[in-house]
Image 1 (cartoon, protein in one colour):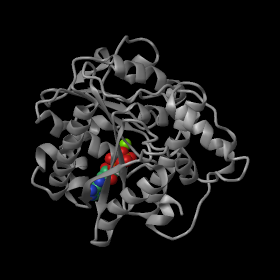
Image 2 (cartoon, helix red, strand yellow):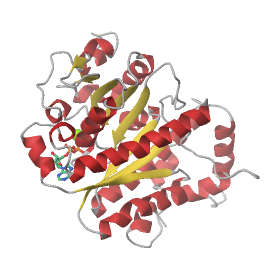
Image 3 (cartoon, helix red, strand yellow):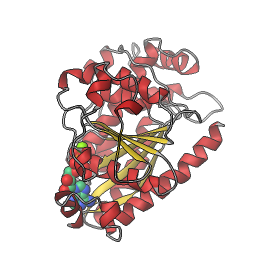
Image 4 (cartoon, helix red, strand yellow):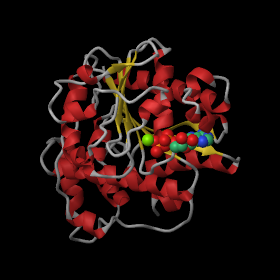
Length: 338
Ligand SMILES: Nc1ncnc2c1ncn2[C@@H]1O[C@H](COP(=O)(O)OP(=O)(O)O)[C@@H](O)[C@H]1O
Ligand SMILES: [Mg+2]
């Protein structure tokens, strides 16, 4: 039974035949947190209009209040609008300059905002063509950047290789969904694409070691018809004496359900958490739910950030809870890795 169907219906889904037959691709993965570069957080998900930019902008503002220096990066290469969520104009220096090789690093395209300790790299304005080569360059720039505690990426929708590789670079991957079946379905697809991308990268020899050996062993079952679904692969990858390994590495994966309207909607987060563990072998941490509220579009229309001007709204308070949950897990995982 698939992740999506587990949440909504009750049927089974196999890995798409075309994806099963093309286990190749590129893109290095670095997931372990290192203290001398910023912790990389990515806010993503398969669908547009679910609230990724809204949450990225407001989480960034809230993060600065914890004493952290934050670099917010508008990585939505097709429709950058993060500056609007912060109530500022588009900048003259943008991500385009970095992607086109006109700027050496992220710091030199970062612009100060009105919020202390919050800098913004505005999105590329004209760069759909740049999207495919952007990931590698941006990943390298993120890993090489200094002077910030957190680099927070606002991602575009979709499951292109560049988006998946960027997301896989993150120490904290935050998935945004709404309770609508279409949004949950896209989240499932996004997770499945992440899994397959990771599989391609491992098989391409980007990483040697236990994961590759286990994966190759698991995939041997394909010719015998034993491996048809992602759960089959995970089952085959289980090593004796150890629990199912986290196939996505050390990255923390979290989910926020945005625009909830009913008690019924509250079951989406826990269901996705459970289904994520069952079907992808990854722990998905449900950070919280954000209510659908009129204050949100009002804040966007007035270009007055929720975290600054609507701090007592239910939506802003819910985001505070999400951040608190995220930070408590981030601290635990960093201690665990040290
Ligand atoms: N909790 C919410 N309540 C009401 N409206 C919301 C909420 N979250 C998002 N929206 C609306 O959805 C619009 C799209 O959000 P946005 O962050 O741009 O989505 P994405 O970045 O995922 O495409 C926002 O401008 C806002 O008006
Ligand atoms: Mg957006």
